[in-house]
Image 1 (cartoon, helix red, strand yellow):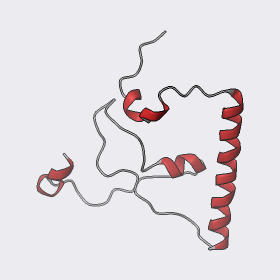
Image 2 (cartoon, one colour):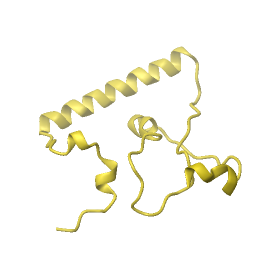
Image 3 (cartoon, helix red, strand yellow):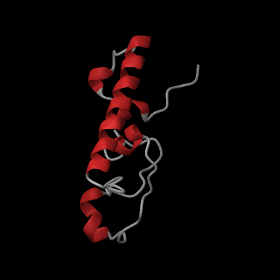
Length: 100
């Protein structure tokens, strides 16, 4: 087979390293995802919300194969909602020093 992509270990949770899902596990996860999607849609409808504004990441793009667990995009990905990133501000070395 092909060699493992270098970033894969950085994008998985260590406590799931031995997890080998069964077909029932995959089915249960799909059902849970659909239930989550329905609940979230209900929240949007009940509160008359047309959209959600949330961060997509805390910094600019990172070098290839160095990205970690995608905590900022999990909700949009789980819900399978369309999304986009709108740039805000400009990169400034002095201000961004703590993130470099």
